[in-house]
Image 1 (spheres, helix red, strand yellow):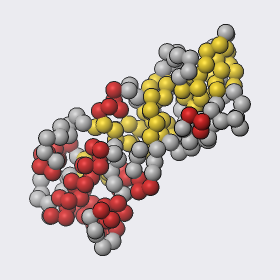
Image 2 (tube, rainbow, N blue to C red; image 1 turned 45 degrees about the vertical axis):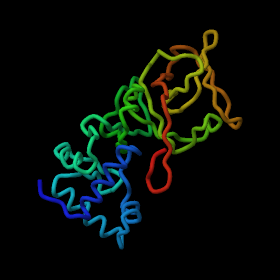
Image 3 (cartoon, rainbow, N blue to C red; image 1 turned 60 degrees about the vertical axis):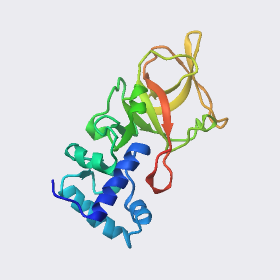
Image 4 (cartoon, one colour; image 1 turned 90 degrees about the horizontal axis):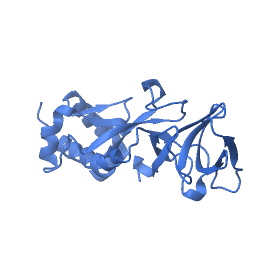
Length: 222
């Protein structure tokens, strides 16, 4: 690989650190502020050089879609020694809608990729859903949150928060098993519960929500 300038090394170190600790690359604005660049354009020029030299990849030209190239492991180890970069994080696709029986979304359904650490893998999640609406506000889930989804069509316990596909609509609700019915309970008094029979046409449980990530300013995930 081509050698890096001092500023390029600083940017690469910041990117690898953010991916490991926050699960997402910093924005060009973040990099400019934290490393005291005179402008975001100067950062973009260095990102272009890092991509050309084979250290990073960018999707759609957006700094939030930066990922590290596999071949740059040696350089990553040099930037942050002692970190096992080959195994410490992985990427999950993000979708805005689901389909019956979805296990992993097709590439055309994916709106972005989010990097998570190995603890996210332990949850069994296979993709993330961008939450729409505030029906689950009382459970701390608001519009725009990213829900980790472990696919499961039937293995749910009463009280689980689940992603369901109901007559073409994707929604997040609390699943309460009642005699002969499932009650899809919102956590917002402005929304009514929905009662459906097991196996009702047009009703599919997609999976269980195992975690929630929230986007904050400067493209960080909490």
